[in-house]
Length: 636
Image (cartoon, rainbow, N blue to C red):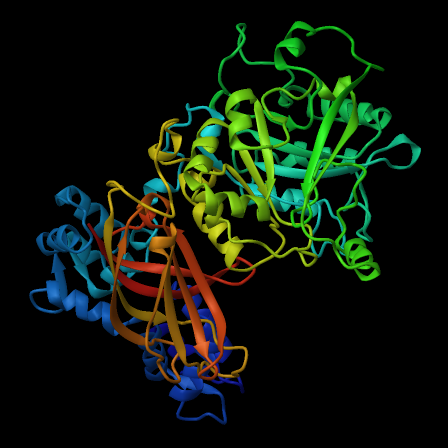
């Protein structure tokens, strides 16, 4: 800091003062994380000469202390330091064991931390830690709330595909609404870079025999199927090596279906799964491990997988297969995704609704013939789309390689009326849930209600920010963000009695205690030009209905820089394996309204115990460094 005494003033003379710009540069050099609005506010408050816009070295030290020397961490340091100045190795070990739950903490671990975080060489040589070193340790990745061991793939990836929750997107080609919004290749690259493993491709006949992708019967723009597959080929395995499923919503004629098959084979090459794994016919789905770096096609299929295997090597070009399908649709349910003849558009639905009042809900039954290019049908191996009729029908007739797509309205009814049967169904077959067609703004349902009954592919509009995508992103941070999460054992058991609406038996319930100590450089309110805000924190548990709960801190007036709460919240969680914890920071605008400032969501079982930092993310999912919450976590 003494070097700044020689800083040149505005007139070229050495004044020993620095302006705001140089203050920011010096803080960066000292590795002090900061938010510009907060530093500007503290700078003006600290400076004795606000008109000249410069500060002395002593004033800079005051800013440094305000930003770096957090009183709550200093109090913690003093409680373990014999002289309130130095933390000897033995006291550091005691802190790690008692407070951070590092049960195996010893001299070797303490020495590593001292070497890594202690900036004063003399203190480091004595195997001690100063407050500066302790502060750096407490602000480091070693003290984040998310367990470091869960940031890599640690789960067993050798179970059948149906035993995993799979990160899935809906209308992946859209980056806005479903009526007039743009279709864009960025939708695919963005979803894949977020760890998504099931992409939807809405295919229609295009000009010059070239299939196109867009939201049928709407004014959304169009992109070509070929470019979509090229983008998928480029980004499929950048963040995860586990399989990608292409969910084709296929409205194309057999002629253009052949073009689709040709693009899939030529562009994806060896990545495309075109036959079964191994030489003997399987009796169960392969695992994510066995399907590493493979892309699977989900579509309707003519005949059985056995027949496809027998035809392997034969040229199917030009052949058209046909099968009869019974269409059963309730007036109040969604349009079947794979029905080419029925427009999905809510716009058209609304126009029709104006012309006549709707009849009372009833079942419509009709039969339609489906024509499929055999070349495309043969590419469907382990993910054959099969229309869902009932749990009983699936139990009696469905093959292991057949999967269902169920609209959210119907799925919600089934979950509430026959939850255990739903769990038994998803223990046997992959089930995909998709949003209802009337969600014209690409809004999302709450995915938790469908994870609660074991649905593997709970498809969301990735382009739409909000609570639902925050739950999705939080859940799939687990297991190295690879897009696959092993379902709890009680959801994989083909004889399970689990019912999320009536939890019985021992599901290893947890008592969770969260002491919310403080906030640090919280995002300033959009309604304030300074760092003044009236922040509060909501802590929510999302899980089975019995575990759903929300608790809230008091409001701290006019302090977004370093609000102190010191409030403790206790939660009794019956099914921790399905529980997510969400921290939401808001500003109280009035007694009836709050403004969202930032949030963080993670699985309960990914939480570290002890003193931890909670990073915060914006509505769009961007990290709001250095904004964070300081908490103490404990559960048993």
